[in-house]
Image 1: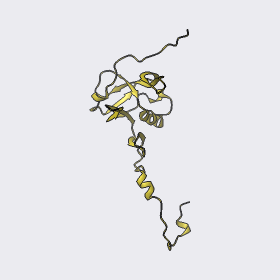
Image 2: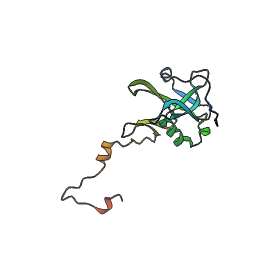
Image 3: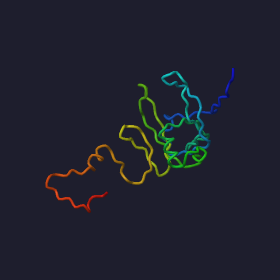
Image 4: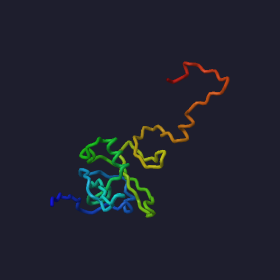
Length: 160
């Protein structure tokens, strides 16, 4: 039987509930995919993306399993190579939520110049904070002009 070596990250794990007062952090290792303790619907082991993070006020780096919103924000800010995510200032945000009925605290690592918002479907996303308000479903509807019978339309006013 052929075996593959499984590399697991050693050391202490970050507990989001204990980091609510922490404002900043830096990733100090490359992020690696490794098996988690969770399984998918077919019973296969799910993977998690783990890196070491140094949190403000802590004496040692801690293991963190990065969520998809954080990973997407890091990719947008620093590129696809996780080695490029290291030693960059990150803001720490936590959020209480329920997953499978269980109360948990999610943690997001947000690059400078970015912010966390909820998209139209209610999912957390991290986007560039360019000072422009992000459109919601309501503002998108309001942006569509309604032309009434009898309105005069100047072709020069049409933006396309």
